Length: 523
Image (cartoon, rainbow, N blue to C red):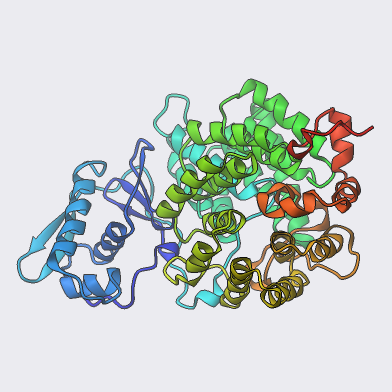
Protein backbone atom coordinates (compact mmCIF):
# COMPACT_ATOMS: atom_id res chain seq x y z
CA UNK A 1 0.00 0.00 0.00
CA UNK A 2 1.25 3.50 -0.82
CA UNK A 3 0.06 6.52 1.14
CA UNK A 4 -0.40 9.68 -0.89
CA UNK A 5 0.03 13.05 0.79
CA UNK A 6 0.30 14.01 4.41
CA UNK A 7 -2.70 13.28 6.61
CA UNK A 8 -4.54 16.45 7.66
CA UNK A 9 -6.25 15.91 11.00
CA UNK A 10 -8.69 18.78 10.44
CA UNK A 11 -10.06 17.01 7.36
CA UNK A 12 -9.84 13.35 8.41
CA UNK A 13 -13.12 11.52 9.04
CA UNK A 14 -14.34 10.25 12.40
CA UNK A 15 -13.83 6.48 12.61
CA UNK A 16 -14.00 3.48 14.90
CA UNK A 17 -10.78 1.77 16.03
CA UNK A 18 -11.41 -1.33 18.11
CA UNK A 19 -13.65 -0.12 20.93
CA UNK A 20 -12.56 3.50 20.50
CA UNK A 21 -14.31 6.36 18.72
CA UNK A 22 -11.54 8.42 17.07
CA UNK A 23 -12.22 12.09 16.26
CA UNK A 24 -9.20 13.41 14.32
CA UNK A 25 -10.32 17.07 14.04
CA UNK A 26 -10.59 17.20 17.85
CA UNK A 27 -7.54 14.98 18.43
CA UNK A 28 -9.66 12.93 20.82
CA UNK A 29 -10.36 9.25 21.37
CA UNK A 30 -13.33 8.09 23.40
CA UNK A 31 -13.95 4.69 24.97
CA UNK A 32 -17.38 2.99 25.27
CA UNK A 33 -17.92 4.58 28.70
CA UNK A 34 -17.49 8.08 27.36
CA UNK A 35 -13.97 8.62 28.76
CA UNK A 36 -11.90 10.75 26.37
CA UNK A 37 -8.20 11.38 25.92
CA UNK A 38 -6.36 13.90 23.77
CA UNK A 39 -3.80 12.36 21.43
CA UNK A 40 -0.53 13.82 20.15
CA UNK A 41 -0.96 14.82 16.47
CA UNK A 42 1.77 12.53 15.11
CA UNK A 43 0.44 9.55 17.03
CA UNK A 44 -3.03 10.17 15.69
CA UNK A 45 -1.70 10.47 12.13
CA UNK A 46 -0.02 7.08 12.50
CA UNK A 47 -3.21 5.51 13.84
CA UNK A 48 -5.13 6.92 10.87
CA UNK A 49 -2.52 5.66 8.38
CA UNK A 50 -2.60 2.16 9.84
CA UNK A 51 -6.40 2.07 10.16
CA UNK A 52 -6.77 2.89 6.48
CA UNK A 53 -5.07 -0.42 5.68
CA UNK A 54 -6.32 -2.82 8.40
CA UNK A 55 -4.38 -6.08 8.40
CA UNK A 56 -2.09 -4.80 5.64
CA UNK A 57 1.55 -3.89 6.15
CA UNK A 58 2.28 -0.16 5.96
CA UNK A 59 5.95 0.50 5.26
CA UNK A 60 8.02 2.94 7.27
CA UNK A 61 8.47 5.01 4.10
CA UNK A 62 4.69 5.23 3.71
CA UNK A 63 4.33 6.34 7.34
CA UNK A 64 7.02 8.99 6.85
CA UNK A 65 5.22 10.27 3.75
CA UNK A 66 1.73 10.40 5.30
CA UNK A 67 2.65 11.39 8.86
CA UNK A 68 5.90 13.36 8.61
CA UNK A 69 5.31 14.94 5.20
CA UNK A 70 8.22 13.03 3.67
CA UNK A 71 10.79 14.74 5.90
CA UNK A 72 13.84 12.74 6.94
CA UNK A 73 13.25 11.28 10.41
CA UNK A 74 15.24 8.79 12.41
CA UNK A 75 14.17 5.40 13.65
CA UNK A 76 13.93 6.74 17.20
CA UNK A 77 11.19 9.21 16.19
CA UNK A 78 9.12 6.49 14.50
CA UNK A 79 9.67 4.04 17.34
CA UNK A 80 8.57 6.62 19.91
CA UNK A 81 5.31 7.30 18.09
CA UNK A 82 4.58 3.61 17.54
CA UNK A 83 5.25 3.02 21.24
CA UNK A 84 2.73 5.70 22.20
CA UNK A 85 0.16 4.24 19.79
CA UNK A 86 0.63 0.83 21.39
CA UNK A 87 0.12 2.30 24.86
CA UNK A 88 -3.22 3.69 23.66
CA UNK A 89 -4.18 0.25 22.32
CA UNK A 90 -3.31 -1.44 25.59
CA UNK A 91 -4.77 1.30 27.80
CA UNK A 92 -7.95 3.13 26.87
CA UNK A 93 -8.21 0.85 23.81
CA UNK A 94 -8.66 -2.17 26.11
CA UNK A 95 -6.49 -4.33 23.81
CA UNK A 96 -9.25 -4.27 21.19
CA UNK A 97 -6.57 -3.62 18.55
CA UNK A 98 -2.81 -4.02 18.33
CA UNK A 99 0.05 -2.84 16.18
CA UNK A 100 2.32 -5.58 14.91
CA UNK A 101 5.90 -4.98 13.73
CA UNK A 102 6.88 -6.72 10.49
CA UNK A 103 10.67 -6.88 10.67
CA UNK A 104 12.54 -4.73 8.14
CA UNK A 105 9.25 -3.86 6.38
CA UNK A 106 6.83 -1.83 8.52
CA UNK A 107 3.74 -2.20 10.69
CA UNK A 108 0.20 -3.47 10.46
CA UNK A 109 -2.87 -2.89 12.58
CA UNK A 110 -4.92 -5.86 13.77
CA UNK A 111 -8.28 -5.56 15.53
CA UNK A 112 -8.96 -8.25 18.10
CA UNK A 113 -12.54 -7.37 19.05
CA UNK A 114 -15.68 -6.39 17.17
CA UNK A 115 -16.58 -2.73 17.08
CA UNK A 116 -18.87 -1.63 19.87
CA UNK A 117 -20.64 1.42 21.22
CA UNK A 118 -20.81 3.41 17.99
CA UNK A 119 -21.45 2.30 14.42
CA UNK A 120 -18.60 3.02 12.00
CA UNK A 121 -20.71 5.25 9.79
CA UNK A 122 -18.96 8.52 10.62
CA UNK A 123 -18.74 11.62 8.51
CA UNK A 124 -17.28 11.01 5.10
CA UNK A 125 -13.77 12.05 4.07
CA UNK A 126 -13.59 15.65 2.94
CA UNK A 127 -13.19 16.18 -0.80
CA UNK A 128 -9.63 16.58 -2.04
CA UNK A 129 -10.16 20.23 -2.99
CA UNK A 130 -10.34 22.19 0.29
CA UNK A 131 -11.68 25.31 -1.44
CA UNK A 132 -14.95 23.50 -2.14
CA UNK A 133 -15.49 22.24 1.41
CA UNK A 134 -14.94 25.11 3.82
CA UNK A 135 -17.63 25.47 6.47
CA UNK A 136 -17.52 28.22 9.02
CA UNK A 137 -18.32 27.75 12.69
CA UNK A 138 -21.97 28.14 13.57
CA UNK A 139 -23.32 31.37 15.06
CA UNK A 140 -25.68 32.57 17.76
CA UNK A 141 -25.06 33.08 21.50
CA UNK A 142 -22.09 30.79 21.48
CA UNK A 143 -24.17 28.43 19.39
CA UNK A 144 -21.27 26.44 17.99
CA UNK A 145 -19.91 25.88 21.48
CA UNK A 146 -23.43 25.29 22.80
CA UNK A 147 -23.99 22.43 20.36
CA UNK A 148 -20.56 21.03 21.13
CA UNK A 149 -21.34 21.08 24.84
CA UNK A 150 -24.72 19.47 24.22
CA UNK A 151 -23.00 16.78 22.15
CA UNK A 152 -20.53 16.23 24.96
CA UNK A 153 -23.42 15.91 27.39
CA UNK A 154 -24.83 13.07 25.30
CA UNK A 155 -21.46 11.34 25.20
CA UNK A 156 -21.18 11.64 28.96
CA UNK A 157 -24.64 10.06 29.39
CA UNK A 158 -23.60 6.80 27.76
CA UNK A 159 -23.43 3.94 30.19
CA UNK A 160 -25.29 5.76 32.98
CA UNK A 161 -28.45 4.34 34.45
CA UNK A 162 -30.34 7.49 33.44
CA UNK A 163 -28.75 7.58 30.00
CA UNK A 164 -30.53 7.22 26.67
CA UNK A 165 -32.19 3.92 25.69
CA UNK A 166 -29.65 1.38 24.47
CA UNK A 167 -31.43 1.09 21.12
CA UNK A 168 -30.57 4.66 20.13
CA UNK A 169 -27.44 5.33 22.21
CA UNK A 170 -25.15 4.73 19.18
CA UNK A 171 -27.14 7.22 17.09
CA UNK A 172 -27.02 9.86 19.81
CA UNK A 173 -23.29 9.33 20.31
CA UNK A 174 -22.68 9.61 16.58
CA UNK A 175 -24.78 12.79 16.45
CA UNK A 176 -22.71 14.18 19.32
CA UNK A 177 -19.56 13.42 17.35
CA UNK A 178 -20.97 15.14 14.28
CA UNK A 179 -21.82 18.36 16.10
CA UNK A 180 -18.36 18.35 17.68
CA UNK A 181 -17.01 19.21 14.23
CA UNK A 182 -18.44 22.66 14.92
CA UNK A 183 -19.44 23.10 11.28
CA UNK A 184 -22.60 23.49 9.25
CA UNK A 185 -21.87 20.15 7.62
CA UNK A 186 -21.57 18.47 11.02
CA UNK A 187 -24.91 19.94 12.11
CA UNK A 188 -26.54 18.55 8.95
CA UNK A 189 -25.16 15.11 9.75
CA UNK A 190 -26.36 15.35 13.34
CA UNK A 191 -29.88 16.26 12.23
CA UNK A 192 -30.07 13.15 10.07
CA UNK A 193 -28.86 10.91 12.90
CA UNK A 194 -31.21 12.47 15.47
CA UNK A 195 -34.18 12.10 13.16
CA UNK A 196 -33.38 8.38 12.94
CA UNK A 197 -33.13 8.28 16.74
CA UNK A 198 -36.60 9.76 17.33
CA UNK A 199 -38.07 7.48 14.67
CA UNK A 200 -36.69 4.45 16.51
CA UNK A 201 -37.52 5.77 19.98
CA UNK A 202 -40.32 8.37 19.76
CA UNK A 203 -40.66 8.52 23.56
CA UNK A 204 -37.10 9.75 24.26
CA UNK A 205 -37.43 13.37 25.40
CA UNK A 206 -33.69 14.04 25.28
CA UNK A 207 -33.45 12.89 21.67
CA UNK A 208 -36.29 15.21 20.68
CA UNK A 209 -34.71 18.02 22.72
CA UNK A 210 -31.32 17.56 21.11
CA UNK A 211 -32.98 17.51 17.67
CA UNK A 212 -34.80 20.75 18.50
CA UNK A 213 -31.58 22.38 19.68
CA UNK A 214 -29.67 21.29 16.57
CA UNK A 215 -32.44 22.61 14.30
CA UNK A 216 -32.54 25.93 16.21
CA UNK A 217 -28.79 26.50 16.19
CA UNK A 218 -28.44 25.49 12.55
CA UNK A 219 -31.23 27.91 11.60
CA UNK A 220 -29.20 30.82 13.00
CA UNK A 221 -26.56 30.34 10.35
CA UNK A 222 -28.92 29.90 7.39
CA UNK A 223 -31.15 32.29 5.47
CA UNK A 224 -34.41 32.48 3.55
CA UNK A 225 -36.85 29.58 3.32
CA UNK A 226 -34.33 27.11 4.73
CA UNK A 227 -33.94 29.19 7.88
CA UNK A 228 -37.71 29.36 8.42
CA UNK A 229 -38.12 25.64 7.79
CA UNK A 230 -35.45 24.81 10.37
CA UNK A 231 -37.02 27.15 12.92
CA UNK A 232 -40.43 25.54 12.40
CA UNK A 233 -38.94 22.07 12.84
CA UNK A 234 -37.16 23.22 16.01
CA UNK A 235 -40.44 24.38 17.49
CA UNK A 236 -42.16 21.09 16.66
CA UNK A 237 -39.33 18.96 18.06
CA UNK A 238 -39.09 21.14 21.17
CA UNK A 239 -42.82 20.74 21.82
CA UNK A 240 -42.48 16.95 21.56
CA UNK A 241 -39.66 17.01 24.10
CA UNK A 242 -41.64 19.24 26.47
CA UNK A 243 -44.75 17.04 26.16
CA UNK A 244 -42.68 14.00 27.09
CA UNK A 245 -40.68 15.75 29.82
CA UNK A 246 -41.82 19.23 30.91
CA UNK A 247 -38.81 21.47 31.36
CA UNK A 248 -36.49 19.30 29.26
CA UNK A 249 -33.24 21.27 29.32
CA UNK A 250 -32.37 20.75 25.67
CA UNK A 251 -35.83 21.90 24.63
CA UNK A 252 -35.53 25.00 26.83
CA UNK A 253 -32.18 25.78 25.21
CA UNK A 254 -33.73 25.30 21.79
CA UNK A 255 -36.54 27.78 22.49
CA UNK A 256 -33.99 30.27 23.82
CA UNK A 257 -32.02 29.93 20.59
CA UNK A 258 -35.17 30.69 18.58
CA UNK A 259 -35.47 34.12 20.20
CA UNK A 260 -33.42 36.63 18.17
CA UNK A 261 -30.62 37.61 20.54
CA UNK A 262 -30.17 41.15 19.33
CA UNK A 263 -32.25 43.35 21.64
CA UNK A 264 -33.74 40.40 23.55
CA UNK A 265 -30.95 39.68 26.03
CA UNK A 266 -33.16 40.09 29.11
CA UNK A 267 -35.88 37.79 27.80
CA UNK A 268 -33.34 35.09 26.96
CA UNK A 269 -31.57 35.52 30.29
CA UNK A 270 -34.79 35.00 32.23
CA UNK A 271 -35.50 31.78 30.36
CA UNK A 272 -31.99 30.42 30.84
CA UNK A 273 -31.86 31.30 34.54
CA UNK A 274 -35.17 29.54 35.20
CA UNK A 275 -33.80 26.45 33.52
CA UNK A 276 -30.53 26.70 35.42
CA UNK A 277 -32.37 26.62 38.74
CA UNK A 278 -33.31 23.02 37.99
CA UNK A 279 -30.02 22.03 36.32
CA UNK A 280 -27.22 24.09 37.91
CA UNK A 281 -24.37 22.03 36.46
CA UNK A 282 -25.70 21.39 32.96
CA UNK A 283 -22.76 22.23 30.70
CA UNK A 284 -24.68 23.50 27.63
CA UNK A 285 -26.84 25.69 29.86
CA UNK A 286 -23.79 27.17 31.57
CA UNK A 287 -22.26 27.84 28.17
CA UNK A 288 -25.36 29.59 26.88
CA UNK A 289 -25.71 31.78 29.95
CA UNK A 290 -21.99 32.52 30.12
CA UNK A 291 -21.79 33.66 26.52
CA UNK A 292 -24.96 35.71 26.95
CA UNK A 293 -23.38 37.51 29.92
CA UNK A 294 -20.38 38.25 27.72
CA UNK A 295 -22.70 39.70 25.07
CA UNK A 296 -24.09 42.26 27.55
CA UNK A 297 -20.70 43.22 28.94
CA UNK A 298 -21.04 41.30 32.21
CA UNK A 299 -17.78 39.57 31.42
CA UNK A 300 -16.69 38.62 34.92
CA UNK A 301 -19.91 36.76 35.56
CA UNK A 302 -19.72 35.21 32.10
CA UNK A 303 -16.19 34.05 32.76
CA UNK A 304 -17.23 32.35 35.99
CA UNK A 305 -20.09 30.53 34.25
CA UNK A 306 -17.91 29.30 31.40
CA UNK A 307 -15.22 28.27 33.87
CA UNK A 308 -17.84 26.10 35.58
CA UNK A 309 -18.87 24.69 32.22
CA UNK A 310 -15.28 23.65 31.54
CA UNK A 311 -15.12 21.82 34.86
CA UNK A 312 -18.40 19.91 34.71
CA UNK A 313 -18.30 18.38 31.23
CA UNK A 314 -16.10 16.95 28.51
CA UNK A 315 -13.68 19.26 26.65
CA UNK A 316 -14.07 20.53 23.10
CA UNK A 317 -12.22 23.05 20.93
CA UNK A 318 -15.14 25.50 20.88
CA UNK A 319 -15.40 25.30 24.66
CA UNK A 320 -11.66 26.04 24.85
CA UNK A 321 -12.16 29.05 22.57
CA UNK A 322 -14.91 30.48 24.73
CA UNK A 323 -12.90 29.87 27.89
CA UNK A 324 -9.98 31.87 26.47
CA UNK A 325 -12.23 34.74 25.41
CA UNK A 326 -14.21 34.75 28.65
CA UNK A 327 -11.16 34.79 30.94
CA UNK A 328 -9.51 37.43 28.76
CA UNK A 329 -12.60 39.68 28.72
CA UNK A 330 -12.95 39.29 32.49
CA UNK A 331 -9.45 40.71 33.01
CA UNK A 332 -7.94 37.36 34.00
CA UNK A 333 -5.05 37.67 31.56
CA UNK A 334 -2.64 35.14 33.08
CA UNK A 335 -5.36 32.49 33.17
CA UNK A 336 -6.36 33.34 29.60
CA UNK A 337 -2.73 32.93 28.53
CA UNK A 338 -2.51 29.50 30.14
CA UNK A 339 -5.81 28.42 28.59
CA UNK A 340 -4.67 29.66 25.17
CA UNK A 341 -1.34 27.85 25.40
CA UNK A 342 -3.03 24.58 26.33
CA UNK A 343 -5.80 24.92 23.75
CA UNK A 344 -3.41 25.81 20.93
CA UNK A 345 -1.24 22.80 21.77
CA UNK A 346 -4.32 20.58 21.71
CA UNK A 347 -6.31 22.10 18.82
CA UNK A 348 -3.72 24.12 16.86
CA UNK A 349 -5.70 24.45 13.62
CA UNK A 350 -9.20 24.80 15.05
CA UNK A 351 -10.74 28.01 13.70
CA UNK A 352 -12.02 29.36 17.01
CA UNK A 353 -8.94 28.48 19.07
CA UNK A 354 -6.62 29.85 16.37
CA UNK A 355 -8.37 33.24 16.29
CA UNK A 356 -8.82 33.46 20.06
CA UNK A 357 -5.08 33.04 20.52
CA UNK A 358 -4.30 35.42 17.65
CA UNK A 359 -6.46 38.17 19.14
CA UNK A 360 -5.03 37.57 22.61
CA UNK A 361 -1.51 38.01 21.23
CA UNK A 362 -2.41 41.15 19.27
CA UNK A 363 -4.19 42.82 22.19
CA UNK A 364 -1.38 42.06 24.66
CA UNK A 365 1.42 43.58 22.62
CA UNK A 366 2.78 40.34 21.17
CA UNK A 367 2.30 41.16 17.51
CA UNK A 368 5.52 39.37 16.52
CA UNK A 369 4.17 36.10 17.94
CA UNK A 370 0.85 36.77 16.21
CA UNK A 371 2.64 37.25 12.89
CA UNK A 372 4.54 33.99 13.39
CA UNK A 373 1.23 32.19 13.98
CA UNK A 374 -0.28 33.67 10.81
CA UNK A 375 2.78 32.71 8.78
CA UNK A 376 2.83 29.09 10.00
CA UNK A 377 1.10 26.97 7.32
CA UNK A 378 0.94 23.90 9.58
CA UNK A 379 -1.60 25.47 11.94
CA UNK A 380 -3.62 27.62 9.55
CA UNK A 381 -7.30 26.63 9.81
CA UNK A 382 -8.39 24.91 6.60
CA UNK A 383 -11.73 26.72 6.61
CA UNK A 384 -10.17 30.18 6.39
CA UNK A 385 -9.97 31.45 2.81
CA UNK A 386 -6.29 31.71 1.72
CA UNK A 387 -6.87 35.27 0.53
CA UNK A 388 -7.68 36.33 4.12
CA UNK A 389 -4.21 35.63 5.52
CA UNK A 390 -2.51 38.64 3.85
CA UNK A 391 -5.03 40.91 5.57
CA UNK A 392 -4.36 39.29 8.95
CA UNK A 393 -0.62 39.54 8.38
CA UNK A 394 -0.95 43.25 7.51
CA UNK A 395 -2.89 43.85 10.76
CA UNK A 396 -0.13 42.11 12.74
CA UNK A 397 2.62 44.04 10.92
CA UNK A 398 0.81 47.31 11.62
CA UNK A 399 0.44 46.42 15.29
CA UNK A 400 4.15 45.62 15.39
CA UNK A 401 5.51 48.66 13.54
CA UNK A 402 2.84 51.23 14.51
CA UNK A 403 3.86 53.03 11.32
CA UNK A 404 1.10 55.19 9.85
CA UNK A 405 1.58 53.68 6.39
CA UNK A 406 1.20 50.13 7.73
CA UNK A 407 -1.84 51.07 9.78
CA UNK A 408 -3.45 52.88 6.86
CA UNK A 409 -3.03 49.82 4.64
CA UNK A 410 -4.37 47.44 7.32
CA UNK A 411 -7.44 49.59 8.01
CA UNK A 412 -8.11 49.95 4.29
CA UNK A 413 -8.10 46.16 3.98
CA UNK A 414 -10.37 45.48 6.96
CA UNK A 415 -12.90 48.14 5.94
CA UNK A 416 -13.07 46.67 2.43
CA UNK A 417 -13.53 43.18 3.89
CA UNK A 418 -16.32 44.42 6.21
CA UNK A 419 -18.54 45.07 3.21
CA UNK A 420 -18.31 41.41 2.20
CA UNK A 421 -19.71 39.80 5.33
CA UNK A 422 -20.81 40.12 8.95
CA UNK A 423 -17.90 38.07 10.27
CA UNK A 424 -15.43 40.37 8.55
CA UNK A 425 -17.22 43.39 10.03
CA UNK A 426 -16.95 41.99 13.57
CA UNK A 427 -13.20 41.43 13.27
CA UNK A 428 -12.78 44.69 11.36
CA UNK A 429 -14.22 46.70 14.27
CA UNK A 430 -11.74 45.04 16.60
CA UNK A 431 -8.72 45.46 14.31
CA UNK A 432 -9.44 49.14 13.60
CA UNK A 433 -9.85 49.79 17.33
CA UNK A 434 -6.69 47.88 18.12
CA UNK A 435 -4.72 49.97 15.63
CA UNK A 436 -6.03 53.24 17.10
CA UNK A 437 -8.36 54.11 14.25
CA UNK A 438 -11.59 54.71 16.17
CA UNK A 439 -13.23 56.54 13.27
CA UNK A 440 -12.92 53.46 11.06
CA UNK A 441 -14.12 51.18 13.87
CA UNK A 442 -17.27 53.25 14.42
CA UNK A 443 -17.87 53.51 10.67
CA UNK A 444 -17.89 49.71 10.41
CA UNK A 445 -20.10 49.45 13.51
CA UNK A 446 -22.60 51.94 12.03
CA UNK A 447 -22.80 49.81 8.88
CA UNK A 448 -22.96 46.51 10.78
CA UNK A 449 -25.69 47.48 13.24
CA UNK A 450 -27.59 50.31 11.56
CA UNK A 451 -26.95 50.05 7.78
CA UNK A 452 -25.39 53.50 7.81
CA UNK A 453 -22.60 54.41 5.40
CA UNK A 454 -22.44 51.10 3.57
CA UNK A 455 -24.12 47.69 3.60
CA UNK A 456 -22.64 44.69 5.38
CA UNK A 457 -23.65 41.43 3.73
CA UNK A 458 -25.48 38.93 5.94
CA UNK A 459 -23.14 36.09 4.99
CA UNK A 460 -20.41 35.65 7.58
CA UNK A 461 -17.48 35.31 5.24
CA UNK A 462 -17.99 33.79 1.78
CA UNK A 463 -21.04 32.34 0.02
CA UNK A 464 -19.53 28.87 -0.23
CA UNK A 465 -19.36 28.66 3.56
CA UNK A 466 -23.18 28.55 3.77
CA UNK A 467 -23.47 30.56 6.99
CA UNK A 468 -24.96 33.97 7.69
CA UNK A 469 -25.66 36.40 10.52
CA UNK A 470 -29.07 37.96 9.99
CA UNK A 471 -29.86 41.50 11.13
CA UNK A 472 -31.73 40.25 14.20
CA UNK A 473 -28.77 38.09 15.18
CA UNK A 474 -26.04 40.75 15.01
CA UNK A 475 -23.52 40.12 17.77
CA UNK A 476 -22.26 42.29 20.60
CA UNK A 477 -19.93 40.03 22.59
CA UNK A 478 -16.84 41.14 20.69
CA UNK A 479 -17.50 44.77 21.71
CA UNK A 480 -16.32 43.82 25.21
CA UNK A 481 -13.16 42.01 24.14
CA UNK A 482 -9.83 43.71 24.99
CA UNK A 483 -9.29 44.16 21.25
CA UNK A 484 -12.11 46.75 21.31
CA UNK A 485 -10.97 48.52 24.49
CA UNK A 486 -10.04 51.72 22.61
CA UNK A 487 -13.58 52.37 21.39
CA UNK A 488 -15.16 51.65 24.78
CA UNK A 489 -13.33 54.71 26.07
CA UNK A 490 -14.58 56.86 23.20
CA UNK A 491 -17.64 59.11 23.86
CA UNK A 492 -19.29 57.65 20.76
CA UNK A 493 -19.50 54.23 22.38
CA UNK A 494 -22.33 55.42 24.65
CA UNK A 495 -24.38 56.22 21.57
CA UNK A 496 -23.55 52.83 20.05
CA UNK A 497 -24.71 50.79 23.06
CA UNK A 498 -27.82 52.96 23.36
CA UNK A 499 -28.59 52.43 19.70
CA UNK A 500 -28.27 48.65 19.83
CA UNK A 501 -30.37 48.42 23.01
CA UNK A 502 -27.73 47.40 25.53
CA UNK A 503 -28.25 50.50 27.68
CA UNK A 504 -31.94 49.68 27.89
CA UNK A 505 -31.06 46.13 29.01
CA UNK A 506 -28.80 47.48 31.77
CA UNK A 507 -31.49 49.87 32.97
CA UNK A 508 -34.25 47.28 32.96
CA UNK A 509 -32.16 44.65 34.77
CA UNK A 510 -30.50 47.18 37.10
CA UNK A 511 -27.10 45.82 36.11
CA UNK A 512 -24.02 47.38 34.58
CA UNK A 513 -21.27 46.15 32.29
CA UNK A 514 -17.83 45.58 33.77
CA UNK A 515 -16.35 48.61 32.01
CA UNK A 516 -18.82 50.83 33.91
CA UNK A 517 -17.81 49.60 37.34
CA UNK A 518 -16.09 52.84 38.24
CA UNK A 519 -18.97 54.95 36.95
CA UNK A 520 -22.44 55.77 38.32
CA UNK A 521 -25.32 53.95 36.67
CA UNK A 522 -26.91 56.30 34.09
CA UNK A 523 -30.43 57.55 34.75
